[in-house]
Image 1: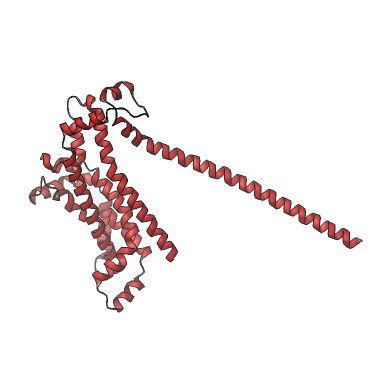
Image 2: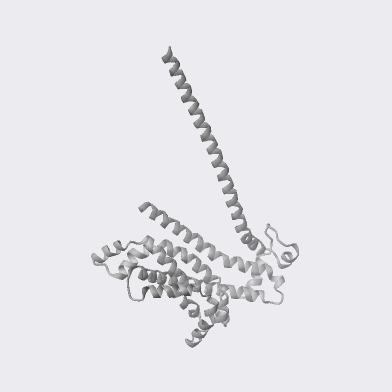
Length: 305
């Protein structure tokens, strides 16, 4: 009889413990739901704040200038898209500006990514006299505002006879201090020197090792910096305005700026917004593709690790 009572008590205790565990699990689950809901609501708010300016640009590109001037902001599209496009192409050469900007931005991104990766690989893999001193110079120049060196840059381009050429905007991209600094830190974590030594023992040449081993491992870092490099080059206005003087060499920001400089610019606000919308498209495309490539490489690296 006592054994039966003890068994019943044990069963009751086990049942109470199970109930308590279930109660704790429900409380934890409710807390997680509340936390996740708050996080998602906050992220949704950030998305809205980030998207609204782009949406307003797209909407205003479909409205006429007087409506933008008198009615202010609206989230509904207008009916003046073709009229704005006609104003745009009649006053400026938007196509030539687009292709000029695309050519410069692509070459700057490719050159900056490749030579910065090569430089970072050299700093990481080789020990040579003055290595730390040279890298210290890189750190110092990172702290110097680019505007301070701009006058010297213009004088240098003048002496080389490269004023009013796209080469004057492309050549300096070969030496990207910020990209070198970032990729050197990245390659230190992504690339093991033992792998390189093994490849050398197998008879692989230095350029072969860089292109077939180091560069693929550095691809996520290069892709990350390429996004910012492309955006910076695409939106570059100051350097282009100073270097370029002929109409046929103007970049897209210069073309849009010249439209805004017209005396009747307030009537052409819709066309100006349309120019802004066109200039946003390549940036969005590059960001989407580069981000996808970056995520795929990081995921592959995580699986391999």
